[in-house]
Image 1 (cartoon, one colour):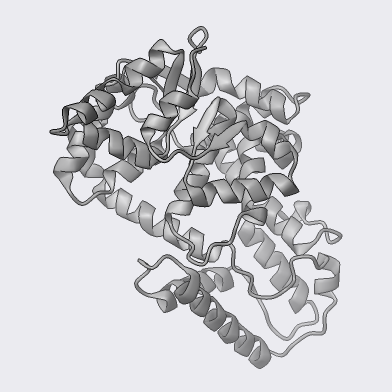
Image 2 (tube, one colour):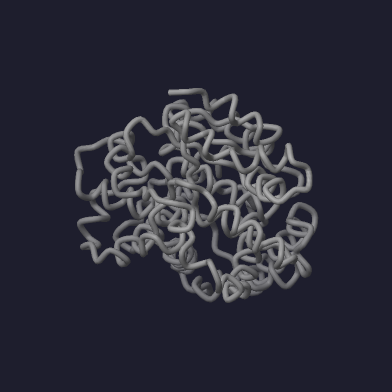
Length: 380
């Protein structure tokens, strides 16, 4: 990191407003936007960019407005960004943050959570001009349109389904679930239909309003789940079904502890699935990585799990909430992180349940507009 530079994560709404003011007919607005980053730099601050902010800016239907937004970011004299697979191409994502943390945790097995954060920071960040940060997007960002559409759809699906609970078994031990009385195939099929209808109802009532077909989404999810879970009339059908579900989540047979609760096992499974992806991407030895890199040592994993368990379950689970959570994973590497009202309330609740989260996240706040940010980011 350049000497005496602090990083600030801007909410996407601030970036969009800055881009609008940058070409405003109002000279005062234009002056504010054009001097925003230079003013921060003079005070010892730099904005930190990631793919998640860029993706939101690119998703506007007005292509001329998107062009303006990118030109604004490229006008920055200096910026910081998450290093992706290729430096100076496109800012990296929360998964790139996760990969850097996994590499640090694997290379330094004696480091704790904050030590892993500090070790990851040195290779996680890149610095340069705005043009260097967005080199790949100068002319062909429109090629990303189909992928951006899928990205939005996936975010809505995750936001709608991930908080859902089909049955109240989160705190039940796996051993107790295995020992429950068996059901015949007809009863199981009826239960599957009931669960699918429950999920469809929840997506319709609580999911992002832009989800066009809750039934189709619920059916696809249940089909994917059932394809990996066996059931039948055999004496071990409960065990087979349970293990199948955990394998689908990301665990390996040797990892399954029947003394763990269902929630603990599923959480570990989802972490292991991402850990395997990160390990494969960097050609790390999987068995050694799995033994050393635990969820409590990976900053972004701690943040995501705390928010999953303790965030405010909003009446409408918006796809943008997934993007906001990804941006929150940048907070350990910034001095100030600006979020929207929904995310700030969720952070407040999560901190009450996970005290160490406050130390990990640092200063997280909201700002009515980007002018407030210049007052918060005082000279260093």
